Length: 613
Image (cartoon, rainbow, N blue to C red; front, side, top):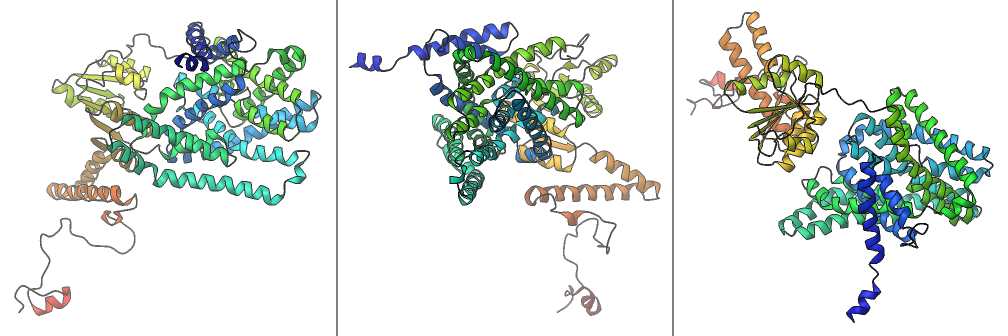
């Protein structure tokens, strides 16, 4: 019985896939070719046109698409709603402009290659959808997803994910049997998609946090992991059933949970599945490369790959330069996004199903996209050889590694230079890191030992000694970077005291919500001292000026507490204003209510006096 069960489940393909990935990826990374190309080569080696361990790669490809789904969920966890809102102009500005321009250019290229206009349109629209998996993988390996250039590419990819919905509707509209689909049915499809989006938002906003709180109180780690998978796959299923992409559903679920207290736990639970399935996706793409189709149609496929990648490259570069990106940034974006992507397979399959494409053309276009995906890592290597990325000159600068100070200071600009003085005067063991090489060298001229390191990267925090520091002082001048560092520290080093420099009042409120131990606005105390000096210059006595400043500081603290509870506009009555009718308020609150000492005074203030009967 056991023998029959063992024979019923063939482990050879599973072992073959794992072995191919384990062998190929380290070799390709060692050769400087990246993990993506290693996975693709591994898939080609064990697929139908290699050793033949896998004969039906399509089945594996559909399962492996869950890797892309989970990858988008992880990206969503990094995209708080306010951050996503800040990208709206890039998503619907840069994204729409790039997609529309490249689609038009590639449709024209398809017509010039002899394709019928409808087929050329589908081919161009499919190729315009960049591979989310490849671009995100490259950006993640470089640590550039949060960089300005990376955020522009993320914005375009999000727009392309959204575009798959109207593109599928367009396929139905231009299909030969399109007249059988009524306008009412199309409106119903759109309503279902919008309803699914609204439903997912409501569930994420009102149900997910209470659910994870209940599960956390149960102290069952495996249940939390199962719940994390349920959220990702459930959101993907809901979007897929409503006609939207699974990746978009997972991304939206991640965004809705990005401000949850369980965010880091969810990321840790999903990460192993994401990594394995994303690698499996690339292996499956390599397996799907039909060498027979390529052999029979290689002149057209070679021409199509060159034409589409060149035209898309030119379109992306032109749009980037038009919107004032630098030459280096425009070139990098063009190389990274010049390939077709996994959503093209979805679009081509839909076109095949409604009769726009025949089976042979579907195979040719699919092979064209896969070849472009295979060529992208090679193109990146070529770009890096021709235009090597400018690394900072670390001559005379030590990189943070194995530090172990009692206090870790991150960022050494004008603020932290002053912060360090009382600590150093007391003899505290201080380790300092900064990512500005020129500043590090300048600080060295004044006797400061500052190490090179980007504090927003978790591995740098570890190397800088965050695990052994009693206190971590985040003194960087960019609010986004400060928040990111604070999140990493709270998640990985909860026992360390976390002190953070706040850029302004709104940033200070964000830091309080992140749970930092202490925050101070960088201009608060200096502005109060400045105001006190101005009062004394106008003839106010020093003691009175000090009392006024103390009251203003107290009012500011009260207003801040009100804002924490009631939002940014709360506590406005605690401000002194120079507009409208004056509102005389005592500098110090009276300890007891005022009272009239005679009937006339009682009438004026409206209360009974102490001596009244």
